[in-house]
Image 1 (cartoon, one colour):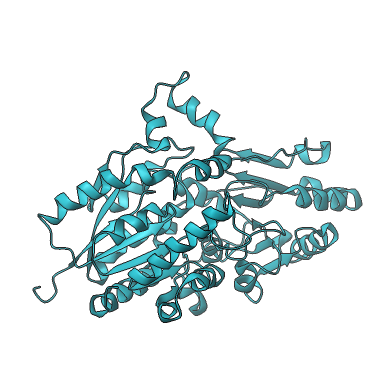
Image 2 (tube, helix red, strand yellow; image 1 turned 135 degrees about the vertical axis):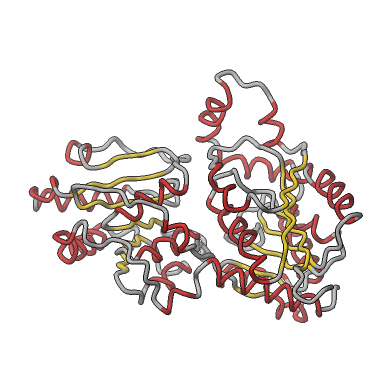
Length: 434
């Protein structure tokens, strides 16, 4: 290889723009910034699938990359090809409410996941590419776990990325004991074969270590999610007349605002004058969450918006006076989404209604302007919210994004995270492929 020449990276990601799901951001940012650190990604992904949210603007920052889209016979791809009454928008709307139930159903009938029917298409395309391009390493990101199984077949030095748990821990769903046994065997093969394994949080990394042979545990490292300061530069913050609480993300049984609403009701009962000074805006979809009707007091202050493109979501976030994070008391310990880091990147106050056992708590508990309340303790939420209002209510509109990133937050920028990935890939070139 010529000195200074980019090394070719086979980059396998089933979920990729224009899909608008949160996990797509991680893969997109890695792909965008890897060339700055010596690696040229060639992305293998699937053609359009039926999904509840798309954001074509995410493609703009990676339009210069080599993105290869393949066919697939997996359910999400086939559903996109089928004619639905009401068009694709109608199909997505009908699909939305059942979205969280589908993976559970698919795990019963597809092994190891429903993307098994993408694998032959992706593998054929990879074989074709390798006749023209000399690849130095392969990177794959999961879910789906099929992405890792595709990467394992290449024989290249391999970094396997886990954006979430797979079904390997006692608290993570597996249809049967046999499924769990088979999943564990797959994880053992991954940890043996890969030269490095990255996970977005320590609990997820620990769950992978539990399945790995002792000689392979050193391969597993934490590479957190992050945020991209460049995303903020071209966004005009929203302008709100009231003290505005913004929640950005989907709502579901693990992310419910019900106890926040109860706390607000109690506050308004004691201090009715605050009702005209506050509003709550929720950006995203509802999945298998039946929220009770809003009371008269809350109808005027709570607003729901559907999924919006990332830049528009950032406009709400940057215009907010308080950013809201929600996690149920029975949430998996490893939950640590990119949205959390994006919140921190704005410099805005954050109200985290989360349990103590999750990774997000350890991240936020000692950070400036981060306030934490127990999700099952309405008086705690009320007390914390009143503390925030006392500190910031009269400063509404005065907490704009400054562009200054404190030292402790620098390591969570997408650029820094990509540099860490590039270093792992470099190390992998000298590592032994199992």
